[in-house]
Each structure stands twice: as C-alpha cells, then as structure tokens.
Figure 1: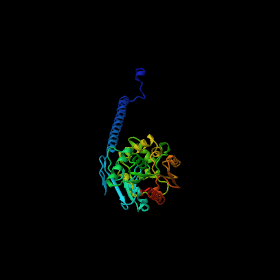
Figure 2: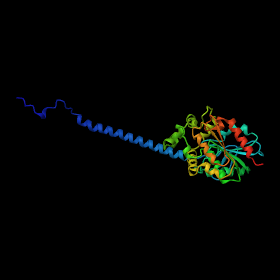
Figure 3: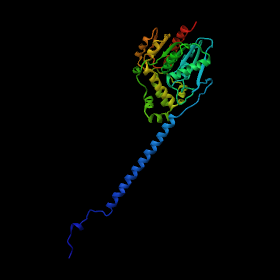
Figure 4: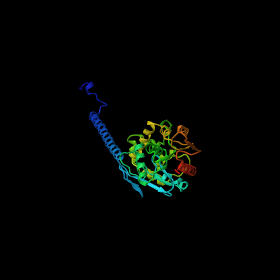
Length: 333
C-alpha cells in the first residue's frame, strides 16, 4: 500500500542547489565591490599624487639676457637705441615678451625693455613670490640693474596691476603709465573660456594641466581675442612652459590686489600721466568699465573699435601708434 502524500514529501519545483547559490552570488557581489573600491582607491592615490606633483613643479630662468634677482631671476629683452626714451612693456597673465612683438615696429626709435614676469615666459618659476607688489619690486630691481632711471611703463591686463604697483613703489622710476585692458575693479570682470575655468576646479585642474595640449591652450586663450588673429606658436609654447603654481598664484594675487583697492583709486593720487587703452569688444573685462579711469586726473582713455582684450595683437598699428605718441609726449626733456 502506498504511503499517503504529505506536504513534507511534495517538492515538485525545488532545486537541491538553490541554497548554495545564494552565498555564491553574495560572494560575487562582494568581490565586485572590493574590486571597485580598490580601483577607486588607486585612482584617488594617482589623482592625489598628480595634484601634489603638478602643484610642486618649479623651473629656472633661461634665455639670452637674465637679470639675477634673489628669489627668482627674470628674463628681459631690450630693443632700440639705449639712449632713447625708455618704454617698459609688461605682459598679462599667461603672457610673455612675445605678446609685444607686433608693436615693436612702431616703437623702433625708443629704448624698449620687455620683461617676462616671474613665473612667465623664460623667467624663473619658483614656488612663491607672485604677489603684485613682489612682482613690481622685481621689475624695479631688474630695471635698476639695466641702468634704467626713468621710463614709461606699459602693462597689459594683469601686467597693468604690476605697473600700478611699481608706480606706487617707485615714483623715481615711473614717469608715466599706460594700461591696456586692465580691469579697474573685480566686478567689471566678465568671465573666461571654459578651458580656463577648469583651472579653478580642484583635482580636475591639475589633471587638465598634466594633459594640456596645444589645442587646449589655444582654447583657454580664446577669450583673450575678439578679432580673428593667428595665435603665434611662441605664445602657446610660453604657456606650456609655465607651471601650474605660477599661473594660478599670479591670477589669485592679481584678483587680491584689485579687490583690496581698485586700480583707478590707486592711480588717482600719484599724479602720473596716464593712458588707458581698451578694446570695445573685450570679452574678459566689461569695456564700459574703462570709464572708471576718468577719476584719475588727466587720464586719457582710448577705445579701439572692434578690438578685444589684446589690442597689441589684434590692432598693433593703432596700439603701437598710441604707445609711441604717449612715450614721446611724456619722456623727460
């Protein structure tokens, strides 16, 4: 006689190996999580190492004429007759002496001294010393060593902040000052290119810097120009030669200097002949802010129509003519 069917004996859909599969699946998931966490940890270590490495990079000065100054040597270039009135040209953030090449023909009868600011071009790129006042002291020391006693000092953008700081420090040296697209105050700042914005994002910025290419550098420079101009390879190479620290520290120092006291306020009490040149289509600083310089007694303001942030490259003829006339007019007699 058959045994009666009971619930205990009925397992028509059960699988003998089902229970062991559960811990195996859990172990597999655990292994995947461990691998993911290990990969994330390795990536974090690599990114941290890259950040530390990029931030710690330094470099020495190079070039034909190096002025030795404690804390950071400067590369300078001199053109024109030494006995002629002296014009000192200071580039902007990320710039170099090469930015002034287009205006040299207009200044050929003057003694032109171009300076690579600390951390830029072929000057030294130490860990520190990028404050506007420090940059100005170094420029002044370099001019002293070159035997320059009186000069018209021209600054483009951030270089205008350095020129202003030098004028504040050395009334004996600076006879007149010209500013090209130098933002008068922080709230006049419009913005920067997307590539340049990446440099303010922690970790991403250092990674971007490590793998920068000529293409990304040109993209970062795009907001510096409004007119269609060919950016010389030398300018791109000079940016590639900078360190991450020299670029970002100079940027931070420039902002701090303008935030502490606007440029027109600083110039108002100096009594210097002042020329302000602004591009009407500047994409970095609001062009209308150029009128802020009217508070500087006797300041002359020139707006170049259709020109962007870099008039010496976008319209070298007009810019060179303005600078030459101003230097001759203000030269000591």
